[in-house]
Length: 404
Image (cartoon, rainbow, N blue to C red; front, side, top):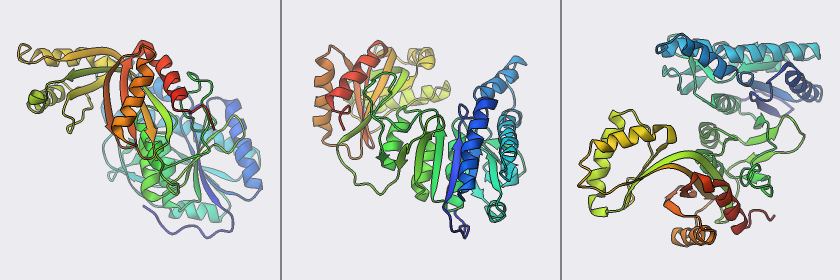
């Protein structure tokens, strides 16, 4: 994906502004002023925009109102218009401030993708046109979330795809940094709305950020973090509402076993079965049933105990799938309303010791753990959804995350 960088004296930044950052004409004016100030200081910038807040949902809803199932190609054609509006409005605002800016759809860059409508992968970016614009002193403003396939069809990258667009452009241009502007000040040790003592992290490794993102932290899409890690693109999360240095995400950090943060994934349902003698055969049967019923799930094939996690709205499908098995031969437990809390560290220390620490902290508060599982850089526990906030606060304080 990477091509020869632009020869320049100033640093080059790819800056992505999310839907809340460009959610109104007033907000677009604020963002334009920020970009214009950096432009006057001689900074080279490539801008990526999401659709205005709520616009993508509105467009999907319009298609639903027609009834029936909309063709995926036409849905992509429809929802990709949201970014076209925001990039054009931002360019108008920039030009009014004396900034030579030009809006570009993904097809005009071009950003080549696979043909999987609604979930396309970026395959190639030709940065030649962007380089020409930068050499001419023009600020490119690129539509995020979208691409074009080999047949010329508009595609979209899935929810959160604008983050991935920005990182991929930064890789292609060998940018000094990719900056993701949003409505939070950076990456926090946990959700500050739940725990007021949550701290903003000045820096974090790709491994830790990827674990947080995959386990429920909403600040960055996991695909964008994985892309940044693959191409070694320094990534920074900042607020477009308040000034600050945000959180820098990069690999050049020593991995430690100290707990970095707690990610939260609400609205989960869970099926467990504790008999290891039946686990392997039963796991295959349940996997086949869930796939047949179109239920997305997660599990751990290496675990001795059997478990399946699904989104809460798919719980009824999970139960229906289980009803097709011989219930007299198995003894499964189903939990319809859970949250998964994931304790993240650069290197997960002794799993047994960390598990014991978590169990002791939660049991001390009368919070029952339904399941514990381990993945790269994270140890997760499932608790009743009603206990989510209390469990987060207990773990946050128990691991000293409220302290610098």
